[in-house]
Length: 244
Image (cartoon, rainbow, N blue to C red; front, side, top):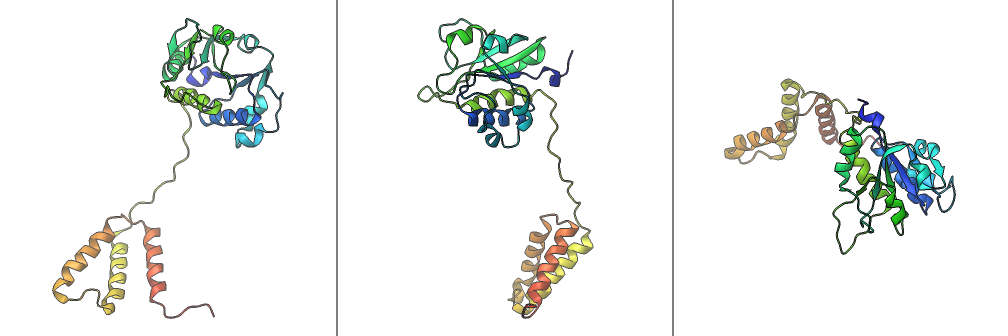
Protein backbone atom coordinates (compact mmCIF):
# COMPACT_ATOMS: atom_id res chain seq x y z
CA UNK A 1 0.00 0.00 0.00
CA UNK A 2 1.40 3.44 -0.85
CA UNK A 3 2.47 5.63 2.01
CA UNK A 4 0.47 8.63 3.17
CA UNK A 5 2.78 10.96 1.27
CA UNK A 6 1.95 9.10 -1.95
CA UNK A 7 -1.72 9.71 -1.29
CA UNK A 8 -1.60 13.44 -0.85
CA UNK A 9 -4.87 14.92 -2.13
CA UNK A 10 -4.88 17.44 -4.95
CA UNK A 11 -6.38 20.83 -4.12
CA UNK A 12 -8.64 22.06 -6.92
CA UNK A 13 -9.84 25.66 -6.90
CA UNK A 14 -12.79 26.19 -9.23
CA UNK A 15 -13.09 29.65 -10.79
CA UNK A 16 -11.14 31.41 -8.02
CA UNK A 17 -11.64 35.14 -8.16
CA UNK A 18 -8.71 36.79 -6.39
CA UNK A 19 -5.03 36.09 -6.74
CA UNK A 20 -4.57 36.83 -3.05
CA UNK A 21 -6.92 33.99 -2.16
CA UNK A 22 -5.06 31.58 -4.41
CA UNK A 23 -1.83 32.56 -2.68
CA UNK A 24 -3.34 32.13 0.77
CA UNK A 25 -4.70 28.71 -0.22
CA UNK A 26 -1.20 27.71 -1.37
CA UNK A 27 0.19 28.82 1.97
CA UNK A 28 -2.42 26.75 3.80
CA UNK A 29 -1.60 23.73 1.66
CA UNK A 30 2.15 23.82 2.18
CA UNK A 31 1.76 24.24 5.95
CA UNK A 32 0.34 20.73 6.00
CA UNK A 33 2.43 19.06 3.33
CA UNK A 34 0.20 19.45 0.27
CA UNK A 35 1.86 20.72 -2.89
CA UNK A 36 -0.35 19.98 -5.89
CA UNK A 37 -2.78 22.75 -6.82
CA UNK A 38 -5.04 22.81 -9.85
CA UNK A 39 -6.96 25.87 -10.99
CA UNK A 40 -10.15 25.76 -13.03
CA UNK A 41 -10.73 28.89 -15.13
CA UNK A 42 -9.33 31.46 -12.68
CA UNK A 43 -11.20 34.72 -13.21
CA UNK A 44 -8.11 36.91 -13.64
CA UNK A 45 -6.03 34.37 -15.51
CA UNK A 46 -2.83 32.69 -14.44
CA UNK A 47 -0.20 33.42 -13.29
CA UNK A 48 -1.53 36.18 -11.09
CA UNK A 49 0.94 38.68 -9.61
CA UNK A 50 -1.16 39.06 -6.46
CA UNK A 51 -0.80 35.40 -5.53
CA UNK A 52 2.91 35.39 -4.73
CA UNK A 53 2.97 37.87 -1.83
CA UNK A 54 -0.10 36.27 -0.27
CA UNK A 55 1.52 32.82 -0.45
CA UNK A 56 4.18 33.98 2.06
CA UNK A 57 6.85 31.68 0.64
CA UNK A 58 4.72 28.83 -0.72
CA UNK A 59 6.14 29.53 -4.18
CA UNK A 60 6.68 25.87 -5.01
CA UNK A 61 2.91 25.33 -4.87
CA UNK A 62 2.14 28.31 -7.10
CA UNK A 63 4.95 27.52 -9.52
CA UNK A 64 3.66 24.01 -10.12
CA UNK A 65 -0.04 24.93 -10.27
CA UNK A 66 -1.84 23.69 -13.38
CA UNK A 67 -4.75 25.40 -15.10
CA UNK A 68 -7.73 23.62 -16.65
CA UNK A 69 -10.73 24.97 -18.54
CA UNK A 70 -13.24 22.69 -16.76
CA UNK A 71 -13.53 20.84 -13.49
CA UNK A 72 -14.06 17.56 -15.33
CA UNK A 73 -10.66 17.94 -16.96
CA UNK A 74 -9.00 18.98 -13.72
CA UNK A 75 -10.08 15.79 -11.92
CA UNK A 76 -9.95 13.42 -14.89
CA UNK A 77 -7.15 11.34 -13.33
CA UNK A 78 -8.73 11.24 -9.85
CA UNK A 79 -10.64 8.24 -8.58
CA UNK A 80 -11.87 10.03 -5.47
CA UNK A 81 -13.32 13.52 -5.79
CA UNK A 82 -14.67 15.41 -2.78
CA UNK A 83 -16.67 18.61 -3.21
CA UNK A 84 -16.58 21.09 -0.35
CA UNK A 85 -19.83 22.90 0.29
CA UNK A 86 -22.08 23.93 3.17
CA UNK A 87 -25.15 23.12 1.09
CA UNK A 88 -26.10 19.90 -0.67
CA UNK A 89 -27.69 21.90 -3.50
CA UNK A 90 -30.22 19.16 -4.26
CA UNK A 91 -27.56 16.53 -5.03
CA UNK A 92 -27.73 13.23 -3.17
CA UNK A 93 -24.19 12.38 -2.14
CA UNK A 94 -22.50 10.91 0.91
CA UNK A 95 -21.75 13.76 3.31
CA UNK A 96 -18.42 13.60 5.16
CA UNK A 97 -16.58 15.75 7.63
CA UNK A 98 -13.03 16.81 6.68
CA UNK A 99 -11.73 14.17 9.08
CA UNK A 100 -13.77 11.41 7.43
CA UNK A 101 -12.75 12.58 3.97
CA UNK A 102 -9.09 12.61 4.99
CA UNK A 103 -9.38 9.03 6.20
CA UNK A 104 -11.02 8.02 2.92
CA UNK A 105 -8.13 9.58 0.99
CA UNK A 106 -5.60 7.61 3.01
CA UNK A 107 -7.23 4.22 2.49
CA UNK A 108 -8.86 4.45 -0.97
CA UNK A 109 -6.84 3.46 -4.04
CA UNK A 110 -6.20 6.02 -6.74
CA UNK A 111 -5.65 9.77 -6.70
CA UNK A 112 -7.91 12.05 -4.71
CA UNK A 113 -8.98 15.67 -5.03
CA UNK A 114 -10.57 18.18 -2.68
CA UNK A 115 -12.58 20.66 -4.75
CA UNK A 116 -13.31 24.21 -3.61
CA UNK A 117 -15.63 26.71 -5.27
CA UNK A 118 -15.41 30.43 -6.00
CA UNK A 119 -15.16 32.78 -3.04
CA UNK A 120 -18.47 34.49 -3.57
CA UNK A 121 -20.84 31.63 -4.40
CA UNK A 122 -19.13 28.31 -3.79
CA UNK A 123 -19.48 25.32 -6.05
CA UNK A 124 -22.40 25.11 -8.44
CA UNK A 125 -24.69 22.11 -8.54
CA UNK A 126 -23.03 20.76 -11.68
CA UNK A 127 -19.64 20.96 -9.97
CA UNK A 128 -20.88 19.02 -6.97
CA UNK A 129 -22.44 16.43 -9.29
CA UNK A 130 -18.94 15.43 -10.46
CA UNK A 131 -17.88 14.47 -6.94
CA UNK A 132 -18.18 11.12 -5.21
CA UNK A 133 -18.92 12.75 -1.86
CA UNK A 134 -19.49 16.10 -0.17
CA UNK A 135 -17.28 17.57 2.54
CA UNK A 136 -18.95 19.89 4.97
CA UNK A 137 -18.44 21.10 8.53
CA UNK A 138 -20.84 22.01 11.30
CA UNK A 139 -20.97 25.77 11.11
CA UNK A 140 -22.93 28.62 12.66
CA UNK A 141 -26.21 28.67 10.67
CA UNK A 142 -26.45 32.40 11.23
CA UNK A 143 -23.01 32.97 9.70
CA UNK A 144 -21.91 30.19 7.37
CA UNK A 145 -19.04 32.07 5.77
CA UNK A 146 -15.58 30.53 5.41
CA UNK A 147 -13.02 32.13 3.15
CA UNK A 148 -11.19 30.01 0.60
CA UNK A 149 -7.98 29.57 2.57
CA UNK A 150 -9.91 28.64 5.72
CA UNK A 151 -11.77 25.92 3.86
CA UNK A 152 -8.53 24.60 2.39
CA UNK A 153 -6.75 24.57 5.73
CA UNK A 154 -9.55 22.59 7.40
CA UNK A 155 -9.17 19.77 4.89
CA UNK A 156 -5.37 19.97 4.70
CA UNK A 157 -5.02 19.84 8.46
CA UNK A 158 -7.25 16.79 8.82
CA UNK A 159 -5.26 14.99 6.14
CA UNK A 160 -1.97 15.90 7.81
CA UNK A 161 -2.99 14.28 11.11
CA UNK A 162 -2.60 10.86 9.51
CA UNK A 163 0.48 11.74 7.47
CA UNK A 164 4.11 11.58 8.47
CA UNK A 165 5.24 15.19 8.33
CA UNK A 166 8.65 16.39 9.42
CA UNK A 167 8.27 18.38 12.58
CA UNK A 168 10.05 21.69 13.15
CA UNK A 169 13.50 21.15 14.67
CA UNK A 170 13.57 21.26 18.42
CA UNK A 171 16.31 23.08 20.24
CA UNK A 172 18.08 20.80 22.67
CA UNK A 173 17.64 22.03 26.23
CA UNK A 174 20.74 22.30 28.37
CA UNK A 175 20.71 20.23 31.56
CA UNK A 176 20.40 21.93 34.95
CA UNK A 177 23.65 23.41 36.20
CA UNK A 178 25.66 21.62 38.90
CA UNK A 179 24.65 22.43 42.45
CA UNK A 180 27.97 24.17 43.00
CA UNK A 181 27.09 26.82 40.38
CA UNK A 182 23.63 27.31 41.85
CA UNK A 183 25.14 27.75 45.32
CA UNK A 184 27.44 30.37 43.88
CA UNK A 185 24.48 32.31 42.48
CA UNK A 186 22.62 32.15 45.80
CA UNK A 187 25.70 33.23 47.76
CA UNK A 188 26.32 36.07 45.32
CA UNK A 189 22.78 37.39 45.71
CA UNK A 190 22.82 37.02 49.48
CA UNK A 191 26.09 38.91 49.65
CA UNK A 192 24.49 41.78 47.75
CA UNK A 193 21.34 41.77 49.92
CA UNK A 194 23.07 41.55 53.30
CA UNK A 195 24.32 45.15 53.45
CA UNK A 196 20.91 46.34 52.31
CA UNK A 197 19.32 44.83 55.46
CA UNK A 198 17.23 42.52 53.33
CA UNK A 199 17.47 39.79 56.00
CA UNK A 200 16.44 42.11 58.83
CA UNK A 201 15.05 41.46 61.40
CA UNK A 202 17.39 38.67 62.42
CA UNK A 203 14.53 36.56 63.78
CA UNK A 204 13.16 36.22 60.22
CA UNK A 205 16.52 35.86 58.50
CA UNK A 206 16.53 32.03 58.33
CA UNK A 207 13.02 31.85 56.86
CA UNK A 208 13.81 34.61 54.39
CA UNK A 209 16.98 32.84 53.23
CA UNK A 210 15.11 29.56 52.84
CA UNK A 211 12.36 31.24 50.81
CA UNK A 212 14.95 32.92 48.60
CA UNK A 213 16.70 29.59 48.04
CA UNK A 214 13.41 27.90 47.12
CA UNK A 215 12.68 30.65 44.63
CA UNK A 216 16.07 30.31 42.95
CA UNK A 217 16.07 26.51 42.81
CA UNK A 218 12.66 26.16 41.15
CA UNK A 219 13.58 27.18 37.58
CA UNK A 220 16.28 24.51 37.14
CA UNK A 221 18.79 27.05 35.80
CA UNK A 222 21.28 25.73 33.28
CA UNK A 223 24.94 26.78 33.14
CA UNK A 224 24.36 29.66 30.71
CA UNK A 225 21.41 31.02 32.68
CA UNK A 226 23.34 31.03 35.93
CA UNK A 227 26.30 32.70 34.23
CA UNK A 228 23.95 35.34 32.86
CA UNK A 229 22.38 35.97 36.25
CA UNK A 230 25.81 36.24 37.87
CA UNK A 231 26.69 38.80 35.21
CA UNK A 232 23.54 40.76 36.05
CA UNK A 233 24.40 40.77 39.75
CA UNK A 234 27.97 41.81 39.07
CA UNK A 235 26.74 44.67 36.93
CA UNK A 236 24.44 45.82 39.72
CA UNK A 237 27.34 45.70 42.20
CA UNK A 238 29.51 48.03 40.14
CA UNK A 239 29.49 51.65 41.15
CA UNK A 240 28.86 54.16 38.41
CA UNK A 241 29.01 53.35 34.73
CA UNK A 242 31.77 52.34 32.37
CA UNK A 243 30.40 54.79 29.83
CA UNK A 244 31.78 58.29 30.07
